[in-house]
Amino acid sequence: MLSKKVLIISVSISIAIHIAILAAAGIISIRGNKHRNYFTVDLKETVEEEEKNTDKKEEVKTSHADDKDGTKETLDTAMYEREDTVNLDSMDTRYRSYLVKLRKRINRNWSYPKGAYIRKEEGTTVVKFSITKDGFLKNICIIMSSGFKSLDMETLDVVKSSAPYAPLPKSFNLSKLNIVANFQYSLVE
Image (cartoon, rainbow, N blue to C red; front, top):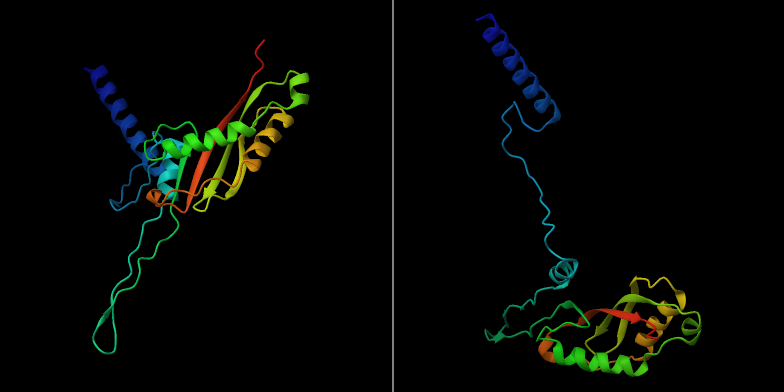
């Protein structure tokens, strides 16, 4: 009987101590403060999807304005910058034909740097670049280096030398298309 009382007392003390620790740490509120804001992060979304969601800006329509004589004047639809990001190898049907032409244009200019070939340098350079609605190159940067300066520089040079590109089709309804491309350099013997 004494052992049951000791067990109950020790469990009660343990629960009280745990509640006090949790309250002190702020995990639970003794004061009953129910209105707290919590932010959550969904780690399932990929970087590419996140860029699509943050880069796109909605189209805004302007309102009708009444003239002095009572007639309504219609203002043109205002278009804010809209962007999208895709991989150069994407099979997305919206961009597929444009990306195929773009890839062919770059491949015609792309070659293995002679010095890198002699030194047997291999690797993959990943770049991100943007094409404006008029087809101009903008914002090129290396996302992941191949580990060799000569290969990385060749990648930047081929993307730059292939510009300007074809203008973005009006059906894209974009002011800029961001493209992520992998350039793999490998020596086949």
